[in-house]
Length: 335
Image: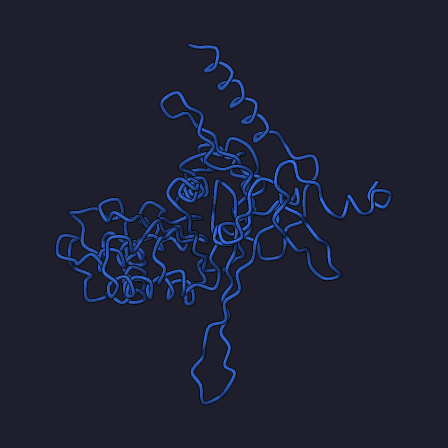
C-alpha cells in the first residue's frame, strides 16, 4: 500500500469516527420533520482515487412532502438516496429519518427500517418485481415478510393496485405488463407496508412521456391519499414541473431549491403555477450561485459584495493587480 493510500484510509477512518460520535448538543427539529441531513459527507475510493460524493450536504424534508432531487451525473443525488435508503452509509455528518439516527442502527434496526420505514422504486423494473409472481402477489410479498395475515394481504394488495390505477393487472406477471404498468406495480409494492418514506430513482427514465405521466400520477396518488413522503431523483423536467419542491445538488451540496405554488389570480382563468427559485445558504454562510448567472456575468475567482438595506449585491471583482477605486479615494475610511 502506498503512502498516499494510507493517508486517504486514515482520513476516511477519522471522518467515519466523527459520524459515529454522539452529538454534544441536540438541535431542535421543526415539527413534522421526517428527513434531516446535517453536514453529510460521503467519501469513497474509486481506482485508488478519493471521490467526495457529498461535501457537507444539509437537507430537511417534512412529512407528506413530494420532492424532486435533480443534478448532473456525479453530483451526489443517487448517493443521497442510497444513504437515506440504508444501502450506503455517510462518512461523516448526521442522517435522521423518522427521528432515528441511521448511524446508530443495529442489524435488527436495519431489517425493521427496510420493512416498515422506507420503500424503493428503481428505474430498472427487474429490480422492483419478482418475475414469476403476479402483480397482486408482488404487492403482497412485503406484507408476508412483515407477518400480515393472508386475507389482510389480499385486501391491501388490491387496494394499492386500485390506488395506482392498475387493478386490472392483478393476475398478470411482469412479462405481461407494459413498462408503465410494471412501474405502477412497483409503486404499489413499495407502499405495501405503508412506509413513511418512498425513494424513487429515475422511475420514469425508460418511459415515453405519456406513460411517464401515468406513473407520476400514481406517485401523486400515493402521496395525497396515503400521506407517504416521496423523494424522486430524476432528470425528467416534466416531473420537476409537477412537484411543489425541487432540490438541486451540485458538487455534493444543495445548491438551489425551487418552490412551486398554485394561484388563481382571476376566477375565469385556470389555476397557474407560481415558481420561485432560491439559492441555499449553508451553516457556514456559503451559497452556490446558479451557473447560468455566473456564466452570464463572467464571475470568477473574487467577487465584490455590496450590502444594501434589504439585500446583498454580488458584482464581478477587480482584475488581478487592479486597485479598487473606492480604496484609492478613501484610504482612511477603509482602514
